Structures are given as C-alpha cells and as structure tokens.
Length: 540
Image (cartoon, rainbow, N blue to C red; front, side):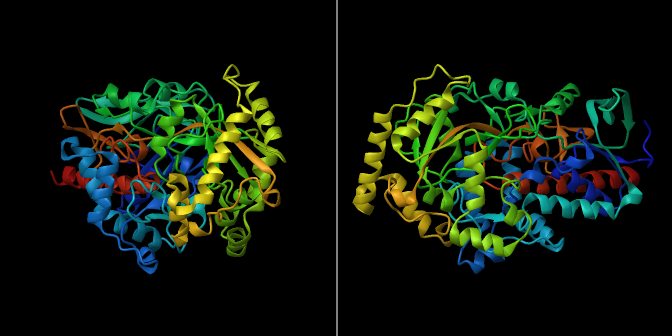
C-alpha cells in the first residue's frame, strides 16, 4: 500500500484525538494519512457517543454563573485528587500544562469552530472539584465530532482516510520509526505504509475485559467477575504493545477510571456492552444483599470510592427509587440516551428539565434488563432476586426483604430529622439543591414509599470499564519517550493512548471532562510537535 500523498504523517486512530491531530497538522500545511480500525460509519469513536462534557477552567460561562475559578485553584484540586507530585515527571507537567492552557487550547478553540456549551456548568466529582467546571457541548459528543469531521473535509487535497485497517506493528529504520504495518479487516490482506512521523491515537485498554482485570488495582478491591464494557471495543492495548516493541515507555496501566453504575444495553454492539447511569442522589444505594452502604455512597462525589466499595462487597449494587425521583434525577451518560441535547432541541430540553424526562424513564424501565418495577416493596425485592438467576453471580446471597426494609426505615428517619440528622447522603442532596446546575436535577425530599410518587424502581448496577488513565509516555511535544526519558525519533502519541499526555496526566483519579479535553489538548500539542520537528529536519 502506498499513500497517495508523499511524506504524509501517519495518524493511527480515528477517535477524537486522531481527528484533532489530523486537523491541526492539515492546518499547518502537512499532509496526513489517517488509519482507523473501525468502519467509516463509526468515525469519531468513543467521543461520538459521549455526553460531551469537558473540564475547563475560568470560562465566561463560569463567570456568568457567579463561579470564581482560577488555574491555581484548579491545579490544586487536580493534584490533590489525583495524588500527583513533581516526582511523577511528565504526567505532572502535563497536568500543569492542561490546567493553564485548557481555556485557550480547548474551550476557545472549540468556540471558534462554532460549537456552543450549555449555559450552566455541572459539578461532578465534588470531592475533587472546588467549583463547577464540567462544560457540556450543546449537541453532545456527536455534534462535536461532526463539526471536526466537517473541518477535515475542507482539506481533502492533503488528507487520506483508510477505514477497517488494523495496525499491528511499527516499522523502524535504525533508531527511527518510519511507518506502520497491519491487516485490512475487509480481506485480511497485509499492508505497510511509510511516513516521516507516526502518531498513535488508538485509545486505551478499557475495551478488553481481560486487560482491565489483569491491571485491576488492588486498592479498588477484587476485580469484578461480572464486568460491563463502556469503552470502545478496539481499545484493546494493541498499539501499546507495538510501542513497547520499539522501546517505548508505557506506564500506569493499573490506573483506570471505571464507573460504579453500569447497566446492560438491550441492543449490545459488543460483548458485555454496558451503559453508565448517573447515580440518582435521592435513590437508596444498597449492596449486593440489599443493605445500605455505611457510610452511604454519595452520587456525584467520588467515582473511584464508589467502585472500590462496590468491588469489595460483592461486585455489584442496587439503587432503589420511586418514579418521582427517577423522572427528576435518572440520567444516562452519553449521546444515545440524551436526544434533546444531542439533537439540539431547546424546547424538549426545557420540558425535560421542568417536568422530568419521561421518555428516558420509560425507555429504561421497559427495555433495560437491569431495571425492575413494582407497586410494593415486597414485590420489588422478589423481582430483584429474579434478576440474579440467569447471571454469572447466581450463587450470590439473595436480597433480603428485611434488609431493604431496615435500610429504608433508616433512610426515612434521617430525612425526617433534617439537617441535624447527620446523614451524609441527605447532606449531599441539600448541597446539590443549593447549586443551580444541580437543583433542577435533584428531587425535593419526600417519603420514598409515597403511593403518589410510585411505582418503585430498582436497578441492578455493575462496574463498567471506561477510561485508561495510564499509557504511552510522552514529553510535552507528544514525542514518545523510552524508559530513560529520551524521545523515540518519528513516534508520537496523544489522547487516551498516552494517558491523555505523559503516560498518566490525571494521576490516580480523574476529574470528569478530562477525557475529551485531554484528547483535544494532547492531540493539538502532538501535532505541533510533529510540525516543529519536521521544520527542524528541513532546516538541518
């Protein structure tokens, strides 16, 4: 296989990092060959299916909402939450660089492309974020990816796109990477492609459950047997191995960002395909046997803690709510189940905010196999136990009605006591209702068993693999480094493949929105690094 364009930079991966890197290179006068393992219809990868939330610091949207943010405050939050120190080297430097430059390099850049954001930033991971920083693209990740692809089409004279091409290895001449080799998925024929630089943007390892389990960090409890997959199916670490084979540093793969509230997709597009619920704050969160977690698990507080405690207590959990709570608080991450935002329909979005998202609740309760509905608590528990029978953990101890009743009595007693009751979940609910970004999505405290608020809903939630926080080591120009910290000529990495920069810029925990933001930022920096190195080669 020969590229139509000579001296093209080879970009491996058609997710958002690969697309942004290709666009940046094209805008700098470079020619690009982009190879993606998936088919053309899925161009954009995981980002296309995302909700479109991006971590950004000190924006006009924050200021209009009375939020006083700064790079100093954001960096302090980031380093504390991720437990990063200067001794971490490049990951620490990438964290510093992202926080200081994300406003200009990500937010302003996207706005200049004509993208817009919801008027109120959201506040997930309150344990990590001092203020709300999660900015949601109006149109979700689908609109974000579509806009970037439209810009790519404007450079068709210097761009080649090849889909269903699986890169297996890197080609080396002396000490320099000079191309890639692999297999065409359509016919099984091999190919080789040469170029002056190769940029790896092929995602992480979270799409391979065997890899997730093998690198599962001990501090998160035992690796779950019954794991759902919420990452791209081609995020299988194949290109990590190819980079290691040419001497690259790959680190921190035990650092991953999984979610606690996964449910099965009723139309799976891959094995163990799961959806990530946004856990309702007012739901009663129970362990595998129906006992309330003590202390209570807090929605929107610390995803890493949720995963660790659930993994250590049976590997799955339950949430119980009534329909009234579900209408106000139930949400599913991603573009697929947020059509009002995805299709940019403001009246439908306003209707859902004011009256509750009936379409989503009805869809989940009638189609998702992990939802059960009943008019009484006894019948609800009976149906919860029926869910366990055909699954891998069928020998697990059944949910006991007396345990659920006891948990519910304690939950209701804490509600009646009010602020003086000292229940951290109710404190979290009251805290959420004080922030305008959460108020519309948090139900007013009412009795769970109020017949007028029914029926009751229970959700069986499993751990869902999502993001790799570690990856291929890079310097701030996106150049892949070896274990001694020296760059490997001709080889670059960006996005999740690079741990969003440096082999792990988030540290041990990730603040929400650093996936899309990190992909965009690291891709732009790597593209500039490629262009700068090419200019130096010409000058030399």
